[in-house]
Amino acid sequence: MTTTTLLKADGISRYYGSHRAVDNVSFEINKGEVLGFLGPNGAGKSTTMKILSGNLSPNTGEITINGYDLLSQPKQAKAHIGYLPEQPPLYKELTVIEFLRFCAQINNISPSKRSQAVNTVIERCGLTDVSNRLIANLSKGYQQRVGIAQAIIHTPAVVILDEPTSGLDPIQIREIRQLIRDIATEHSVILSTHILPEVQMLCDRVQIINQGQLIFTDTIATLSQYMQASNLLVTLVNPPSITTLQELEGVITAEQVSSNRFRLHYHPEHNPTETLLNKAVSLQWKLTELSPEHHSLEDVFMNIIQHESSAKPESM
Amino acid sequence: MFNLARNELYRLFLSPLAWLILALSTLILAYLFLTHIDNFVQIQAKISAIAGAPGVTELIIVPLFSNTATILLLITPLITMRLIAEERRNDSLPLLLSAPLSIYQIAFGKFFGTLGFFIILLALICLMPLSLSIGSAIDYGVISAALLGLVLLVASFSAIGLYLSSLTKQPAIAAMTTFSGLFLLWIIDWAGTNQMAGESSGLFNWLSLLRHFETLLQGEVNSSDIAYYLIIISLFLTLTIRHLDSERLN
Image (tube, rainbow over the protein chains, first blue to last red):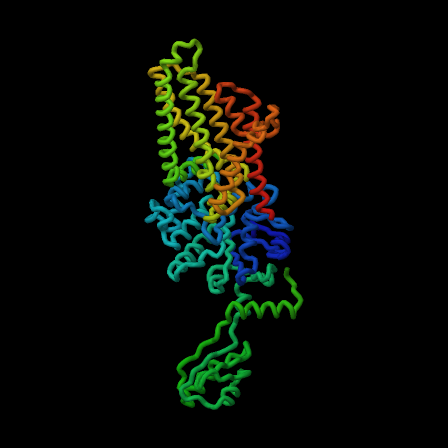
């Protein structure tokens, strides 16, 4: 498979005063890829997104978008990106259709193609029913959709979405995710978020940024390995003694959480679930709960940070 | 750029502010227009005997345009305050900054959008003196010169307002600084003319927005006055562009 690099960031750094918000970040995104930018709040995600979209200039480094340098040829480069900031940039006194028409104009869509572009994007983003309503009167979820519509109206090569699901309710989140998946079929997408499942659901590749530095760049599969839980939570109505649990094959330590709830820590390659189930049935421990414990984003960060510092960082 | 100007003008008319300003300033000027006519009617009998006496143009239209300039000084800050400060406050500035537009297109688009509004206002106001042409002879030369003066004046007001609006996030601060700035430039020549020596300060005189407008109001079109306004306009537009540009860097 041949890949075309659409966006390339090379050693970008950005300082706010003496605070280093983004520190020597380099990466690229290929055609048809969804790249997740994962990091806790204040890690430099939004700053990176602003730099990529040309809203901020980096202090050092360069960005090439579809062959155009963002700093020396901003107009050509910006024609190939669509950007949705954390707060969707909307003129709330306009109706959806008026606003999108204006976006088509400022993105240099030729007059003959404008109304078609507006109609296409309204349909794609599910805005048909609200197209004549004022943006100010729409729900947050719909406003977010208008924001996405604005970012893809000129069919850019790369779409940059900064926390597109923040502040939405679960149903809206699901709809927006569906929309992003849909967009990803035609555009490359850079997505920033602090929600881990979102990245797993949407992205092909993930980058973790912490304190302005990229500490992890790999595929989702590799990330999942980091996240693989090696803890089991079990609740037994008739629990045996804790030593019995500890002696199960594969279990390293057993810890009593409450009177009949236990946490079993095991070797990742030696999952004791089956042994535990068999024993529970034959010895009548009356198992009522068995769940693998998920790592939180913080755990994964800690895991990766520890991993990076113990093994010398190979990829920067 | 013109799309941006058109959008700016359109959005302006979606707010009640623009309509209110149009309605109220027309109302005030119509009242002033009537008082000028009233005055003229009273003294008409006395001056009609004098040859070369001032006519309708000098006694009604010129004072009316002079009043218009004062009204413009008061309302420009209200229109320009929202230009960039409000975009910043609503977080809608990234829309323009990430579109394939250069900063100068953004600044010019906003400037021309505002100017468009004032030209509509001036066109409305112009109808009043023009209605006098039904019953009286008026000097179109003086009117055109005065109108040119008004357009240049309000264009400079808008450029100054645009720049001050680009500096802040609070429209109210933009309005206040613009008003103070304009007012200061309006009266700056007082320092010069109040001197007893008679020889006034050349620099302050030259800086005064009003001074250059007065000559145009008398029907005198001097290239130096026009150059003054063009310098003011381009200076503040350049400052706006510079400021928006440097914001991305710092």
